[in-house]
Image (cartoon, rainbow, N blue to C red; front, side):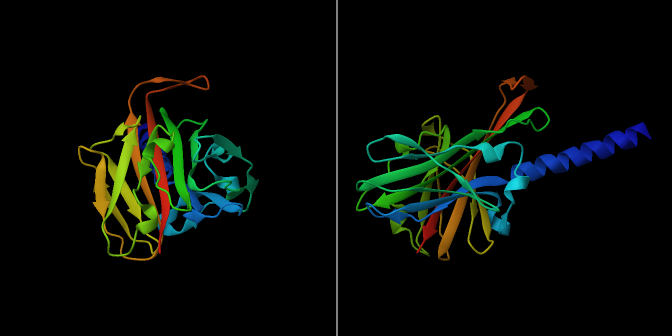
Length: 237
């Protein structure tokens, strides 16, 4: 009986852990903006591919206590004020000059999943005027980047670049989630690059993950590994 109980608990924990991994934090904002015009930014948690946006009250651990930042063309990093909604948080910023703006989140959940620490990261770019975004503008430890995101079109190949500690992240799995529920997994090459061809218009969310097996302590608890999941959100028009 004890063995059966232990097996049942193991299966339950495995399911919970898998559910946590399936969930992600992502940002939704328009890819272009205007000087002097307010730019809305929304942050969701759930499963984009299943069109599931969890109620804020059900977000994992203390994920809802994340901070949202914007980095402007002058590289100034500013924290944005968050307003909670039913299933998202919303913030607003007003671009004061032409150039590229990057909004981002980097939050380590307080609660461990067994002996694993979870680190949620997310970013999105806003172009004001004619500008390009450099990957280095995103200060997150794990990130995805798309060159010329405003030029992305259906049926046109698109390059995704993954970075870990600002170096090309080779051999990483990138999950691509489309606006109609289609999903695909890619693997980055030696330059941290993976390609796919979007087929539909709408918002895409892409995610890259990494597992660091260095142990440590987090809020007084021992962990054996750190899981990082970084999303990048953009629109195909």
